[in-house]
Length: 126
Image 1: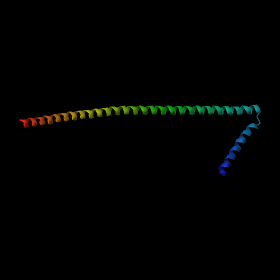
Image 2: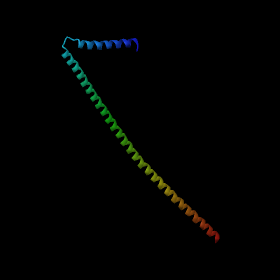
Image 3: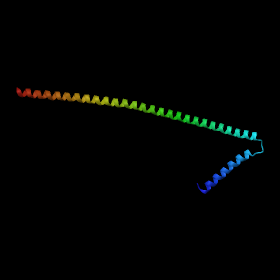
Image 4: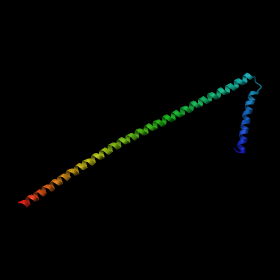
């Protein structure tokens, strides 16, 4: 810490010690002073509890919001995957139909060639 930082810490520490000394050495009776200090601590504790509850509620809210966002995103992803699955299946079915048609055409051509060859052989044998 630099010289300025050390000086600032010393001033703040001195102010805190002075405030405590002022409360303890005030002309009021000890009982009143103790009550003031007790009230101050209770007030601070209540304030701290309130702030902790508020922070806890904010964190819960944020978590539930993020959970809802995650669930929504996940459901969207699953739906898209289902849609893609149907698209892939439809595409494969179309391709299979094309292959069946091509195979049937190839069989028909093979039969035609076989019949022509048989006819050629019969005509040469006659």
